[in-house]
Image 1 (cartoon, rainbow, N blue to C red):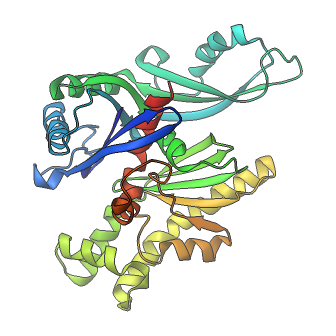
Image 2 (cartoon, rainbow, N blue to C red; image 1 turned 90 degrees about the vertical axis):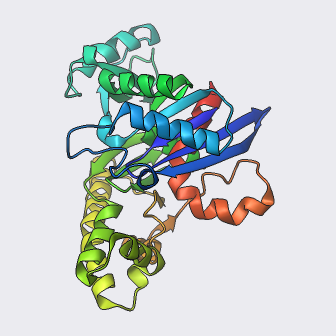
Length: 343
């Protein structure tokens, strides 16, 4: 199975095979939008989710060819700003009644008509048939227009669309392995960030926040009068540990609003359910910012990890260091590929 993550600035692909219980990383690849076009693959500000089905399909085909990936079946991840995730409760009912009840009630919780969306849902609490047990549902809604875009991209790229999946579901699958009670998983992307609360591998809450890795680069560029590439290099090399006050001070000022949002979500969790998270996981391209993991650990007094999405896959040992370094950027593509092998 091939998982494809069409990000703002790059497309990541991961090919995984299954043999019995073991799974093997067969191949992976990445293509950056800057190497093909002047525009990013996505531009939310202009109101379009994909720059162009034609351009994206060409880029997908290019990275599959470059990585010599022959597998035709692919799963595309759908980004947080193109999906609606929510959870809600239903009264006690039988398993037979549940599906219709979810679809009937979904319209109360999503901003689009149900007829214009593709719905996926999961029971995360309660037992159908138990008259004393209310049922908790986690619902994901994807606009049909988005699904149609990916169908077109797959067709133009010459691949078979096996499924589409909200990227947060892929993240949970590839990164949360232990049955820890509560984990806060923060995905810091180029264009947006999601803060997710997970209980025993079940996604409880997903909150999208307007914090982006690109903002950090832009601020360093403005503060020091540097070009984008130079600023990006400085950010990735020095980050919060920089001895240059203009850099560290600028980054702390931008990261603190993210810290405040995480604190708020964790506080809500404690007030509503009396629960605290056991650990904080960081992922996404900006999670490796020097000093960020340590800063989170200092503020929250929790175990903070940057989990490796490849750690349970088989691959040549010589690739170990390379894969560990790039893992945070490939978590989504890996997770959706793994999902295709579960069914």
